[in-house]
Length: 159
Image (cartoon, rainbow, N blue to C red; front, side, top):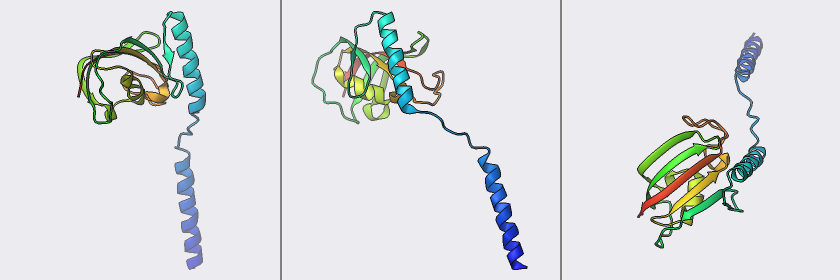
């Protein structure tokens, strides 16, 4: 009798687990393929808009230093940055603008962590960031998943 109870318990548990598995969404996101797609989109965008940019070969980030700024701050995760910025999608849709924004380097997207150390206080840079170094395959407010981001950033203070 106890064997039957254990068998029924096992069957019920297996049924519950099988039912739960149906609700799981299979993640088919391929970050390498997405990075290639992003890079191709950035190249086409740069060409179409006649932008003179450089590519960070280590990370694949495209950038244009508009003004280098002055100073010799060595950026760390704790560096406090004050800046004015505008964020756009490659189709030109502006999703955010902020003047006087303050944040620490350790609290920002990877694309900014890579690009901002290229300039100093008073500097201005345009960063075109593959989705991998932005929000990845996750929607973030008005920014769709897998979006390449185009930021123009002016640093007004560094501490």
